[in-house]
Image (cartoon, rainbow, N blue to C red):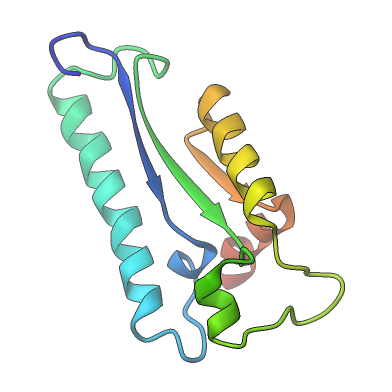
Length: 121
């Protein structure tokens, strides 16, 4: 990638990387770490002159809300209300690919979860 000066590095984080939550002692810190690693990586790339244009080297963070995965279902988690349903795996996957193709550096899924970091201040 550095030789070609192009490519994409994609990391899947979570909205839990922006806000702690009950029973999130193991999960939330790992998602905070993903965000920190990607920020540091972006800075190191910039220092090496590899971010001439965002289209060439761009870091992506995909931050989905709960997706209906086996892990979530096994834990017995349920949506808190009909206003905040869990995303299907297919929907989440399509949105991730779309975010990568549109070169969005940070993408929240669904869009309303962008409010969480703003509310947290």
